[in-house]
Length: 270
Image 1 (cartoon, rainbow, N blue to C red):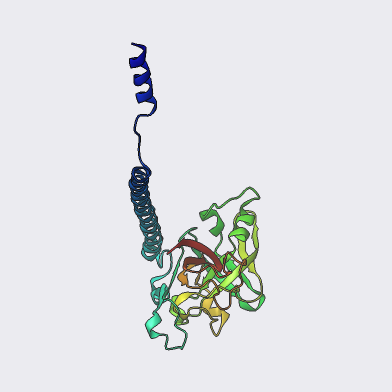
Image 2 (image 1 turned 60 degrees about the horizontal axis):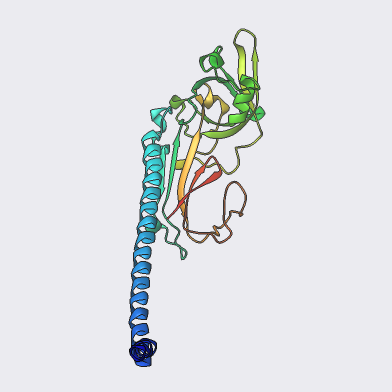
């Protein structure tokens, strides 16, 4: 009996196991399975990331198209029909003819954000002063925490259009510096900085000055939104400085900008 127990113990202790070749084969098979699983995961993860980036790109393009289509519909809003030729201006890169071709540009003008149409009673161009009809300000009760006068100077940019009957189409873009008026809605008007507003060029060649300041009598003064959509290809657009007026620059390209009244607003990268 004891002899049988010894044999059984010996048999269990020295039970045959895996050979070295079997171990190597097993490890190789396991390694192949692991590598296959990792490749499947990496491929699946790449597809997920690509789909997410594609979805974000579609969203950005839809957002950009929304802004552009909205502003296109608003082109010329609040402006006299006689100046319709100045509401919209496009630049086709195929028609530029220069050695360095820049992307298409789209410029839109309208009284979009803050409606204002005040009839001019007298324009003293040399003194950069304009008088409007009595009670004009009362028609547009714009206000701010600092008072209605400050609101006009904060908005700042206006377009002075001549009387359509004058035959002149030389509009002036000005920067409001002061509002003047008397009690009872009389002696109302604006004072402007000398010279046209810098860096703001209306579409259609509207910028300019009529031969006589009398051409503006009976014309109109309005808040103006001049928006321009353009693509910065390489982040170093000529004439712009990185960090100024919203322009990113610094070599960061493929950014669609909306420039409004001289300030550059970056839209999604495309």
